[in-house]
Amino acid sequence: MQNQIDSIKDDVLARIAAAGDPRALDEVRVEALGKKGAITGLMKQLGGLSPEERRETGAALNLLKDEVAAAIDARKALLERAALDARLAAERIDVTLPPRPEAAGSVHPVSQVTDEVIAIFCEMGFAVAEGPDIEDDWYNFGALNIPEEHPARQDHDTFYLPAEEGERRPVLRTHTSPVQIRHMQASTPPLRIIAPGRTYRSDSDVTHTPMFHQVEGLVIDETTHLGHLKGCLRDFVEAFFQVDNVPMRFRPSYFPFTAPSMEVDIGCSFKGGELKIGEGDDWLEILGSGMVHPNVLRAGGIDPDRYQGFAFGMGIDRIAMLKYGIPDLRAFFDADLRWLRHYGFRALDLPTLYGGLAR
Ligand code: PHE
Image (cartoon, helix red, strand yellow):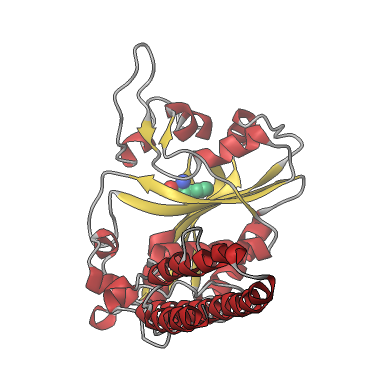
């Protein structure tokens, strides 16, 4: 019997050492220690031995079982380690490699500038409001004191959508001013909001595109006046362009929804195809503004005998062109990757007043 034990031991230990993967190892275990295994078979023969032999052989068999089990455990741990090492090597990622250039996106100047505008006005205590791109005729025109036959309706080169049966034609909003009305209806003064978003007019040249971006501003309180409007816009312009004393021109103007009304221009130069602000003797109009017309307050459900305030509508694309020296507005929406790479911003450059707005 001892001979058998010795030869099984040599055989099993050799096969354990040769097992190349957990499955092969398990086969060896079953063949040695399983119900029909070689060692189990010897155990079964113990019954036929004399008490003396049984004790001795039994002890030797138990020793063998323990030895084999330990060898299997050790081999198993080794194989698992090797498998893990192989997997780690196969799935290795070199985190120091730079990202592939084609995978690197950039933030569009319009998005960046919108975030900058929001950062500045929110610092002044404004909240952000929104409205739909597809508007009711009433919100886009009627409520803003632009009656049916008013020439402003033609001025806006409106895109109309087909009307539902018996309804008026919806429009692609020609400005962000309808958000004024929606916000007045939804809240009670004092009001202090900006409303950035897309706007649409059938117009296209170097400084106009059929879809463009505006940010509306609205402040309503009991004593808000034109001086607040001018101060607010000057603070904005200086924070946005990060230049003191930007030349600004407040021109008397006309909008049906404000009285009095002013258009605001910023001093700039267009020399050599490059646009620079704060110098030169050209002006670029960036916004329309004024004191909110009593009829507009009424349309928004606000009592004009108690409340007054100002509103403005500024071209986001315009101020982006000025700040970042981008000469042609149409290129903004060409989706030309070379342009985006040149004028785009890194995704993590979030504008803040303390960290700087332009980086
Ligand atoms: N809605 C006007 C425009 O698009 C701008 C404006 C807004 C003017 C608010 C005055 C007050 O031209």
